[in-house]
Length: 180
Image (tube, rainbow, N blue to C red):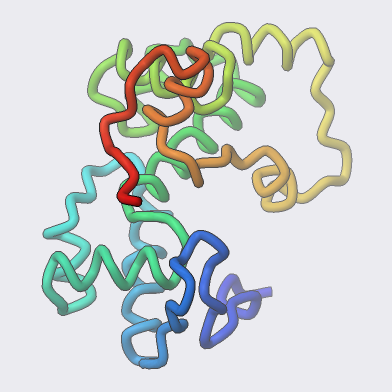
């Protein structure tokens, strides 16, 4: 089955979209956004600044970022983080590569940043994740890799800094304030 068969032509407005936000209506823009998303998926280890993605789609940086979030529910940077962490989890589970090799293979330039972001997103360090996987005797059986990845996909609907603030029991002040 081709990967594109699972996609709908006009995705619904994501639940995180503001009330009244309409789904994207331009099929050509959606196709170009999917092309940029596919490129990120194919080479998630590469740097994907908004400028590069906007050039692929053929729109301004601001329009790209806004359209990507509207179409897929999360900003492009968070989407890329999700893919990198997802790939790192699979490599930790399925290979005997060192954590350093996994960090660099999934696009991180710093082992410290990889470990911090990995822990922030999954709640466990890469080493703890590997130990748990080995202790559980990971045997995927007949589960397709795409289903396994989807089931283990990290949730990045909430920003990492917001997660830290919540875990600290609101002792860390929010960097933004609500307007009432």
